[in-house]
Length: 457
Ligand SMILES: C[S@@+](CC[C@H](N)C(=O)[O-])C[C@H]1O[C@@H](n2cnc3c(N)ncnc32)[C@H](O)[C@@H]1O
Image 1: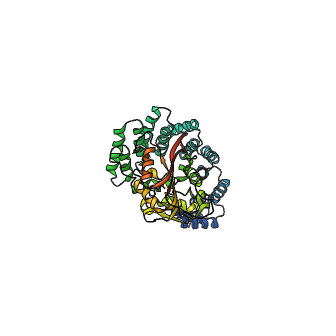
Image 2 (image 1 turned 90 degrees about the vertical axis):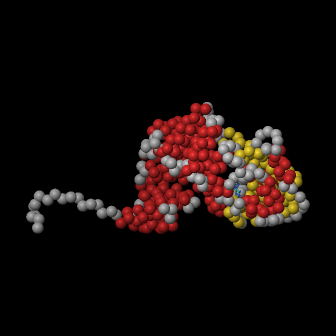
Image 3 (image 1 turned 60 degrees about the vertical axis):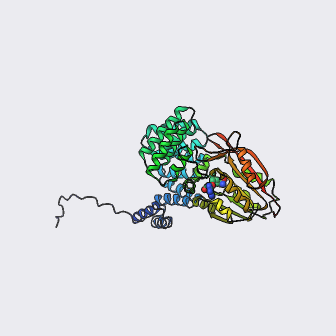
């Protein structure tokens, strides 16, 4: 028994966690494990237990964006920020959603707000530098990347992003040399980021330090003998035999990874025009867009050609090796069928099935074009049209090469010869601007050719 007035020291009782806290924790665990259904249900439970709980609103917003419901995502995170306006993560995540939806000015404003609330939020700083870069404000981007390196030298992702920026926007040799340091540091700080090794190899090669570039890929391959990227890049830098086309595992690996960061990559390629250029080229020779043609989008990627071809197509089929890219194409819509398959094999298995085969920036992963063009010829009905782009290899002669970027380039003469040899007629090979890279125009061959005969609908 304690006397009434005993000198008891009362300890404040441990705060009882609110009922929603355990549910929120489970929701976040499920979210991190990418179990979006469970996470969504649990965030909903949190919001029933405690209306407008800001963390649940914020993370449910992130989840909605992952489900391609970005408008809802923005509304949820803005609601969270009304309650906790100084939350740097929420500002940063809202910025990411705007960035991935292409609203760069809004994204920039969010990252700046994140930095006002949390000046050491280095993810936000790196994101800010990136959106300045893709808004083609290289001086401000340069300043921001420099600040990132100064303030956060051990932030691996920052080193990597700065390395890419310095190489892509290099004004002089020193910038490429600095990019080498950034890539080395990025990899030293986070050995999971093997992309830093690819960056390192490309920068070394750019500076003419070919042996060192090959050494990077050889070391990497020794550590990861099954990884198709260093194998392909070793060939691309002259350290191994050139494959007739990019290995299927390489294409899958690159493009499945690319699909995840597709929206970001697209921002870097705002002026990507290959689909429009091809659709215009083939549009000149096709009958009116009366929805009567069977069309194949060969190497459809995320489906950028679909809206340009839909009106002409009775059926529109997309084929691609990368399941990740096909998923993006499915989300975009417009196709009657989407198939994950290797292109040459697919074409061989579909004789006389198509009136049009269009292939934007896909045959740049083929060195020896003969098999794929012969297969395209056989997949077309008589009178059908093939159109595709290639990267330009300057100069005369019947040549192609695998460049240090990992893509193939073909000369005009080679292209003409191989399209003719596949049996096509009415061949035209023009040159057009296909995209801008780091402020510079990249032109490509634009090929249009017809299978003889006349069976077109
Ligand atoms: C640069 S993307 C272009 C995608 C799309 N055509 C566009 O213009 O946006 C190249 C695409 O070709 C695909 N690809 C490369 N080699 C292939 C092959 N042998 N068979 C099928 N698809 C291939 C890749 O997976 C990738 O999606």
